[in-house]
Length: 416
Image (cartoon, rainbow, N blue to C red; front, side):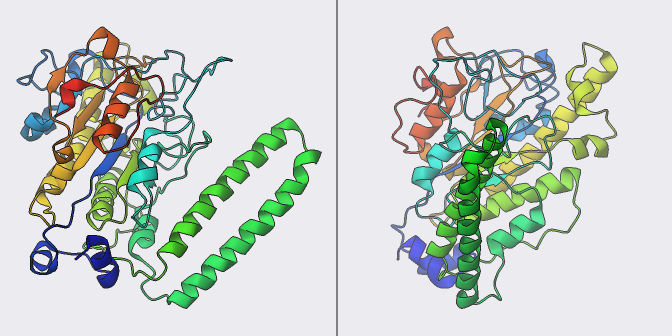
């Protein structure tokens, strides 16, 4: 029995015993890619980064919560984007694109983020080509609406509210197909009217206003793309969530945890195979009774702020450890763990202060045997580009991509 047809026919979350009884053993378990980015970097030096390279590295204070997963991690000592020119508070804006902030004239720049390249292939058979989760506001992440950028170099919007995301993924159970189709047609008519009115203004407005109109057209493109996907799946019931609906008003640890749970539910039910999460930080700092992100990031060696920064790092990696726990606990239809079929990255677009070199980046997940953990590694001088990592992950996921941004090759240390 084809796995996708089975999902479409039941519209239910499929537990392992049920699948073992009814599913075709030859059904393939899909590869999934998950990218988590956090703003403002980490505490510098050996507070976050380990001291010694190799597989038997000693975890720092900031990474201590990941101890039980140490053998499944790759942490990079010296991975950087090609460009050092950046806005110091654009801490995640170009993380998945490796784009030059200044964009000097005559340069060649990839506008699309690596997740959206992956979604073009991995998202063909799923209800959502990709999912974007994001913070409520900038929070120091910089430009963009999420970690994702489309092929036009425009920001892709994301979900900030777990309740809204839950309802999108698993809601509409009481709405008939006819009603859903009527809703789609109404939204499409609104988009058509809006586009026609906006086009008539293009020749009459200033360059600044044209830029604003371009942003609106980008929004229309994303909405129309979403409507097309919705229409494609309109006759297929949404799956059951396998988790309770989130409570309203969650903040800090509870908010991030439930977003992680929703990410896992989305890939477990094969609603999508590509997810990005621009993780919030402000409410977590408030929960921990810490200073604001900016002074912690710019601690300048002041011990009180350094200690706060380490506390922040450990709290974030504890949450990341929770995500890995969940992935390892969930079984697939073939008996493997969800973790075995995921490539998961966790990192930031700055190291500390204004430095966007030697970034804090972790790779984990089994990747269906296409990647392997390498411990704490120092890359060769000719292979330190962040774009090389994204190219490695794309190729490991089966994406036929010879180059990404300014990549010079792949990172053999993590390729199985």
